[in-house]
Length: 75
Ligand SMILES: [Zn+2]
Image (cartoon, rainbow, N blue to C red):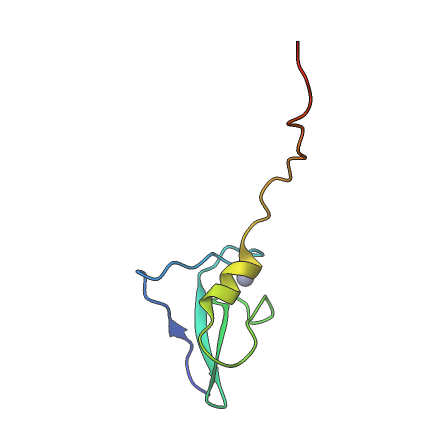
């Protein structure tokens, strides 16, 4: 069992959407998983390459959903 690898600070990654922890890289059978640094039950990327983009995609907070009211006329 190998220790999770810390991701360099220079690499941008979203904090865990559940607990706000910085993700770490875990290794499983020679494959890499990006997962929550605090809780392995939180989101983790599918085993394979280090896929921080995938992690970021799944841990990005949904932007406030503002319906398009551009056609709403005022005045
Ligand atoms: Zn977490």
